[in-house]
Figure 1 (tube, rainbow, N blue to C red):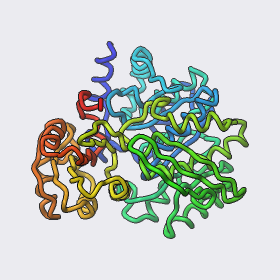
Figure 2: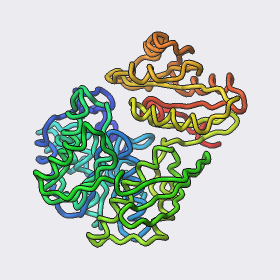
Figure 3: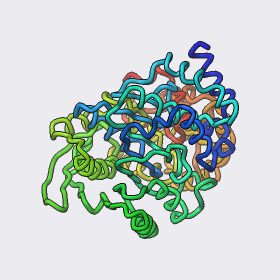
Length: 436
């Protein structure tokens, strides 16, 4: 098969969560274990870091990978979903897996795949493990898909586990309370393996403590270990001071992942860095500082407060659940001038509880509701009607690029256009918009 034929096969033949939602989710690890058994269990042959969480796990994964890469370690990175190219999911030192290797893996595993009928995600996870083992990475950063306990990535034995935070998302699969969701995420905690909790809530802290105690896993709470202060923000960089509470030492950092919510993720990253040093992965200060200032360049991460145009300002952000949107709105409150009107280009998937998001959006903004072209997308006209119930006024478009064009026509030079609500909507933004 050619590469395109291979990708078409993956999309057409394998159940895919991004396309059909919960029906593609396999609530056990049997298929992943079977796939990895068939390729001689590559996941057991390299060191790894395992990262779960409701929000922030992608940014945290990329920042850690950038730091390890800059420190000279051959670093694998597995994340999902992708924005433009399937191969974004599997990288080594910022370089995507080659098209030939994707084709080779699918052909090598076709027989077992046809027997066990894995999901798209299960096969992709096995592909990443195979690639990292064959390329002899020093370490791989592995992001969960959703949840943790039953996520396909949870067959690894990492040297460090990380749970960034807990919020309401994927409630149809993970549970409808923070306690239930926390228990699923805590499923990545392994016997004796240290775990960093980026951010906890009163409802979640004891769940993590109890699981760590049961597993005899050292546990660290990053929000208690580090304090962030003196936050200065520009549209391109975020600068902040971070103080170690244990040593009373303060350092200044510049982040090109410049959403204000990254001030939470940097605490998690620095906490993890200290533990990695105990495992022989030493990151010098200059490598650390450079990596955090150039994470996008080093690892190819996009869609996190990406400013793609000025006059008017156009920002892409993959915020799609209540916690993510709240953080986005907080950042807007910091950067918005009194004279700046807000324009939201927005699309969501139909299996989310969109009412919580709509209820917190500003009523004085203008809305351009749209949809991605996947089965899971909520039709733009339906989203328009739901928005009206929350006094969100605007119009709707079948294509996100048409929505952005309309917003640009309506926006004054100092207005702000936010494109958000779904990773899949961001993925369909035309390349012509990506150059300021």
